Length: 298
Image 1 (cartoon, rainbow, N blue to C red):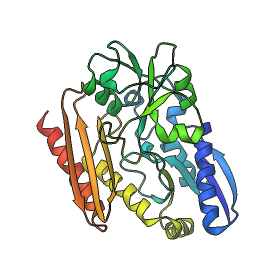
Image 2 (image 1 turned 45 degrees about the vertical axis):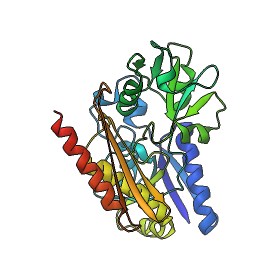
Image 3 (image 1 turned 180 degrees about the horizontal axis):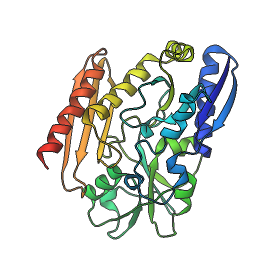
Image 4 (image 1 turned 90 degrees about the vertical axis):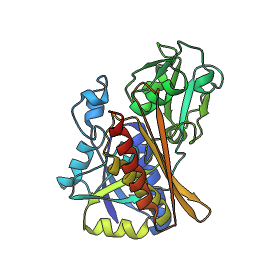
């Protein structure tokens, strides 16, 4: 099998391509592949806040366009970077086994405490609306400052105007950085829907899509799609302080979502449970209920 794979040129993105290929090779044997490197809107503009870029899917759109243009067979993404809707000609045909879905707070010194334990005035680096609101919810005395760039760039700014930086735990694991950090419990700091998954997009009804759908782990795919259903039914973008995650506890499925005000002063949490076949519907219910709560506060 030969596959042309579109991906961003960052080190993390290329590592994620390798993770995908190794997982597929465990299932079907050696794969002959070519990486098509594509710079996204987020790669080309590394300073403006995400909401100021005027593009939906700042890390996704140009990479997916390589598939739509016939230059690549599949595109590889961090699933949390995929917007709630993608081009209807495409489908999410595969997700890898999930990495750590948690966020991590990183420091230059010893392992940091939780946000409510940090000194007032500490500068926290993040450009995520969700992370910003959660930080302020726990400690409104902290100074949350925007930060852009790939994970190495953001970590490199520690001590240079930033006391702490928030990144995904899965990204830390994948790039293999050994740095003082604290992984934040899901209940304390709900992640972005899809965080920890590597997603593959391909042309709907294509041969490669059919092959990948046969190979994907069904439980992983179900959880990933339930979290996307939560995001889609809410209808929010990257400027919305929304978090959510789904999974299984024993034989029972659950979806949990959180919505915050931008200043973090109010946080609403909802959870629905379901059987193994009802997780998608649970995600839809959570997202819809959070949307109604959000509209009621406007």
